[in-house]
Image (cartoon, rainbow, N blue to C red; front, side, top):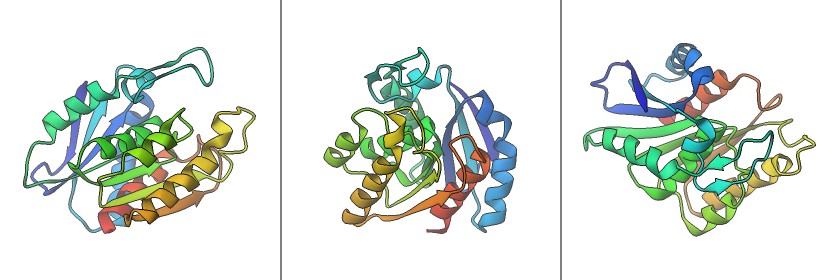
Amino acid sequence: MKVYEYGELSSPISLIQCVDEHDFSSLESEISLIKKLTDRDFSLTAFMTEDWNRDLSPWKAPPVFGKEGFGGEAEKTLKEILEYCSNPDKTYIIGGYSLSALFSLWASCKTDVFKGTASASPSVWFPGFITFLKENPVKSRSVYLSLGDREEKTRNPVMATVGDCIRSCSDIFRQSGITTTLEWNPGNHFQNAPERTARAFSWVLNN
């Protein structure tokens, strides 16, 4: 994956985000908003995925919309990210939007490298994910969750479960004693992604 670095790289806090071309185009505005929402110093490293559905899905799954399934190569992606996150003096926070947000939650169950997880509108409808989460506790100290208030109002029967799934995530984290919050944003999944992601990262930075 190509890696893009922003901000002061000597900062003790490093934000980690997997992106696609669409996310990449709005990264600077996202970073600008994070700076307005927190006084913490940070850098942000963006990992450009080659294939969103393949690189960020934790295991293979059939198509949920369209004809493209999920390749299940998140392990490979995480390995590349962990090779980057090797400085013991840094605090690493992982986050993202949509499938990148799901990947962030999954990654935080696989390693304790990430001290915080910023998960904006995560694809927690992903088949089998809630079962996985119950069996594999998140290792981050704090987890931010959000969802658009219209995201569960869809005709797609799999994606319509997202509301119940994110409520389950919130309950699991609270019961585990993790510092967490669940924010409901107005609109559907495709509204204000940079702003939602910025709020996710800033909440973790402030907590």
